[in-house]
Length: 191
Image (cartoon, rainbow, N blue to C red; front, side, top):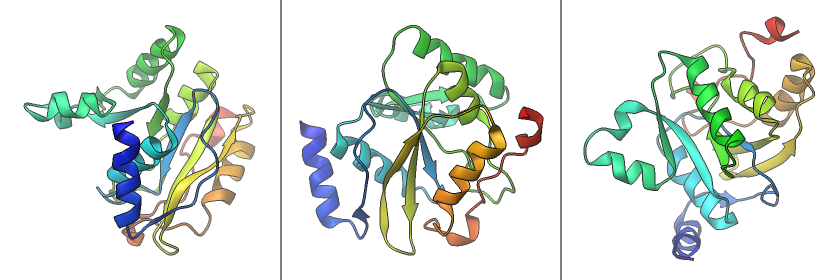
């Protein structure tokens, strides 16, 4: 209740408009893209709180150091050591298989730095946990943000990524120069 009230206030003051499809009806991997600014974080929380979605999100372990740790965990954060990406996927999948019900927010284009490819962890989490993928977005060109469609992955990585690329085509992040095209380095390796 309090989170929804905070979210309502946020949307009244925000320069962004919430333009969203309905919240997914089952646990999902929520993509947050393009991820180009720290402002993406409050936008993601405001979307989730407004729509009543229980979210968890992955953050580098240094965000959870000291006094910030309890706050980040209360906001749904899961600290990760990015030196072993396969362990991150296994941890999230284990939580889903253990019965935890949540939307896991993943920023596949990484940590707001210039990259050439998206990270494939979201795809592995979704397929291994049997979860759909919800396409969350921020678009600074139109000053809109929200959730797009929720899709079930087919296992045909190239076709799935083509659908994802089509949705994100033309959407630019808050810092447009850091926007990364939705393309996995491993796309061919999945075939």
